[in-house]
Length: 84
Image: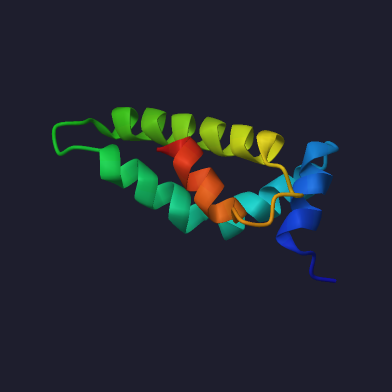
């Protein structure tokens, strides 16, 4: 059964690690784009990994704080704003 984004967010907010993992997988390209937008050529691999972890923390925060009742802001845009 495929869950909608809202269903996955609500499940993740309730503690479902599977729902969070599904969201993270679906939004991985967005997270990666945000990371590489801020990465620079003089950064070490560890620096980029640290930046990636920070982006993931911001994504987690976006999942936890997103209001599924607001219809005029899609989760992807909200997550991008939070990560940026």
